[in-house]
Length: 163
Length: 163
DNA sequence: CCATATAAGTCAATATGGCTGACGTATTGC
DNA sequence: GCAATACGTCAGCCATATTGACTTATATGG
Image 1 (cartoon, protein in one colour):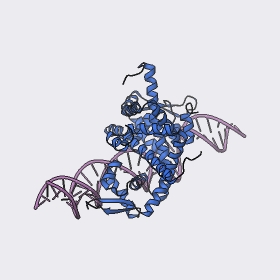
Image 2 (tube, chains in turn yellow, purple, orange, blue; image 1 turned 60 degrees about the horizontal axis):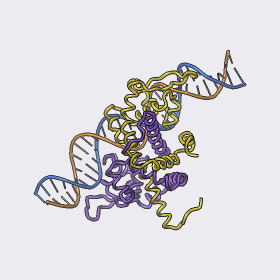
Image 3 (cartoon, chains in turn yellow, orange, cyan, brown; image 1 turned 45 degrees about the vertical axis):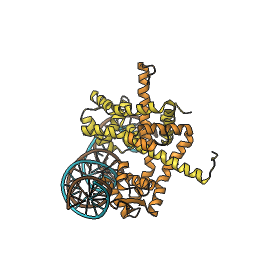
Image 4 (cartoon, helix red, strand yellow; image 1 turned 180 degrees about the vertical axis):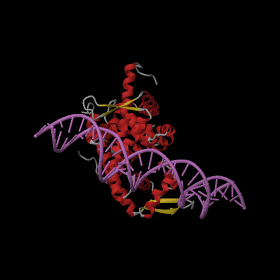
């Protein structure tokens, strides 16, 4: 708790420090998404499609409601994008095994291929950043990002790790 | 360079590690922007307005071209948002001191107040994350984000620091 | 068994924020 | 003087988000 040297100079540094942290996040997200956007545009898709494909690939069998909980968009917004992906054969729907109201989502082989292609540049970018920064920095990166995330999701995502 | 234990298990872990890094960025950005969006919506503004206000506040006297270079959008896109902010009295334009073609941008007092209000929750969020993660983690956070940013901007942003 | 709740889909209207392309204006600088 | 530059603008298009209302199918508890 104890603030260290709460003088005005200290406060100025703190403000600068925080602005830097904000801007780095902005620039990093901007460039992180830019590469994939180019590929997506060629395929006639947008970022929203990528997000859906990504998380369906990440959690095969995920339900629509869970997906909405991750993306934080409305079901109407999801519906348009998801519908396209289903119609174009990238995602398959199956009724839930116990609850048949659910539509469990999975990538088709075409969807898997697309996911790989789309995320490859991003994984490469992250891998490069990780390699350049080193393992200790990666740990810090994850700790701070986790701290930026809402408590509920933070618990789920960081659950095993930070005690 | 030397890869450590390039076995298939190692590759699996690496893939997981990279996915985690990608998702943390997604979740963090999602939650980082969510709070300010609420305030913006009440004022009839969007995220684009916030970004403009933020960077004009950050670099008082910035030119339109420089702003475009930061935001990576077209002048037409910027024009709509910037025009609103100027018309509503949040941003003032002055011709450049040496090059009178330029329109140097500055926050008006109202703009400064709005910037403060908008960014306050974000700074608070970053401050909380920083405090929870610790100074070493913050250093790592910055190093990795810097590595995610395109080379040209990385040089500008990280110039003084990482040698 | 029935009532209610839940999972998901759908129709319609609206707003925001990107984009391309074309064109205009003032100013700079060779 | 003329090309390049900094900026603005008009017009149209598209992707992605929103709210609100309504439907269908299934689950579940009293």
